[in-house]
Structures are given as C-alpha cells and as structure tokens.
Amino acid sequence: MSPFDIANKEIEELLLDKTIEEIMINGPGRIYLVRGGVATLSENFISVEQIDILIEQLLKNTGRRVDKSHPFVDASLVDGSRIHVVIPDITRKYPAINIRKFPKINLTLEDFVRQGVITEVQAGFLTYATTTGANFIISGSTGAGKTTFLRALLNTHSKHTRIITCEEVFELHLSSLNVVQMQTRDKGLEGTGEITLRDLVKGSLRMRPERLVLGEVRGQEAFELLIALNSGMPGAGTVHANTAKEALSKLIMLPLTGGPNIQKSFVEEVTKNVIDLIIQVEISKEGYRKVSEILPISKKFSLEKYQQFTSVAS
Image (cartoon, rainbow, N blue to C red):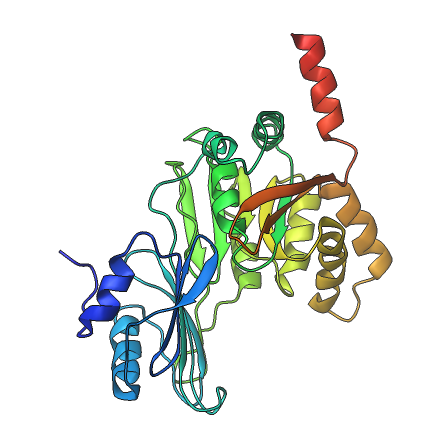
C-alpha cells in the first residue's frame, strides 16, 4: 500500500521508484528526475491544475503551509523524503517543487569502501575519529551526498550513544536507540510560534547529548554550535562549500551573523581549536561520489597520526 495519498498516479509512481534520488517539477511538462546524480527530462506530464493539487496533497499532513505570505516551504513527507516548494510571484510563472528522496537502507562506511567513495584506510580513520569524539563537518555541493555520509559516520557510534539532532526538516535516520530528533517550525497564522535552528541548538544543550548534530550549518545557529563545541561537547554537521578550506572560511564567517558584539578573532581562534576535521565530498558530472579530502583543523586528529598509530599497534 502506498504511503502517499495523492490523486496523480504518475507522480505517485515516481515517488515510489527507489531508483530516483530527486524529483524536480519546474512546470507543466517539465519534470526532471535525478538518478545516480544525473538529471534527465521525464516523459511524465503534469498540468498547472495538477501541480497546485499535488502541493496541497503532499503538504496536507506535514503541518506546514505555502501561500502568499509564506511562498517557500520545506517539509518532510511520510516516507522521509524532503519537499521544497516555491510559488509565484517568487517564481516567474509556475510553482517549483523539489522532492529529495533518501535511501531507506542506512549505508555504512564499508558500503562506501565497496563503492569506491572512500578507501579502507580512510574508513578506519573516520570510524576511529568519530567514536573517540572528534568534531567533524561534512562539506560539499548540493547532491554530493553530505547527509548520507554524515548518517554513515554517526551510525559508527554505539546504539546507546545519546545523539541529539537539529534539522530544518527531518532527514537523518539513525540506528542509535538513544536518539532525539528535532526540527524547526514556521510562524503560525498569528505570526508567532516560530522555532529556529538556533533555538533547537540552545534547547539541545539541556538534553545531555553525547553527540550534537546540526543537519546543516547555514546561519546564526553556527554561533550556538561553536559555543557548544567549545564546552567540550562532541558535534557534527554539514555545510555547503566547494572545498574543505572554503568550508572552514564559512564556519568562521557564519557565527559572526549571530550578533553585533561577536569578534572575528574570537570566532577564528575557537573554530580552529574545536573543529577537528572537515570532510569534503564531491559528485562528478557522471554521478560518481567520493571523499576528495579529509582536512584536519585542530591538532588532535589527522590521517597521518592514525596511520602511525595503527602501524605501531599492529
């Protein structure tokens, strides 16, 4: 039985197709499907009226809305997929819908070794770093596989490790039994009730996390994350960046948006002390994903030290 309660059976079939990573609807007759990281134009058709109905039906049970006062919306669908909708007059003529699907099976680092995403040495090092409390950030472009790789790293923890996640929309599906997931909330019709990522990070500190996870670092919440990591709490997250060095620059810049009295010198020093690793993931034009760089920031963890340690131990 399908989890989706929508009238458009063609779109429902696309939602159920496990080979499709993302569905992008740009307007009537313009549906693009992403498989293996590559987008192709679909023969499936949807009319303007059907687009409006589809948006209403998909958002029906999410607790989120899209209208003239809220022309953007992010929500989690019943199967765990993420939907993003933008409507006119923000878009030129037609609503734009992106549905990002996530694999139901939790891929492991061993799976990534078999797929050629990482080497065995890298997998061993990242397992060691994660389980011994390294603070790490996964960086890369949209669709590079940051969330999937983050999930694989977090699943190297014991099933009883207490993990608290803060996300705009639920995307992380972890194997830990001691996990609490939280997501943001938009303002209500009265203009109140908004819960931001910054609020979630602040609240998570009272929940005794053994690993604090920020699904995506993109704004003022970066300052709260920095303060948490500086207090000795292991953390992780993702950030959009073209290179690991650009990711580091972004992690230094974003906390400065948290308030007028935040000094860059303080942020730069603390960031370089508390962030242990930046792991850059990339996707080629052909859709091949790989870890292109593991950049040590603090002096606690490095691949070279790990290799020396393991060679002595053996």
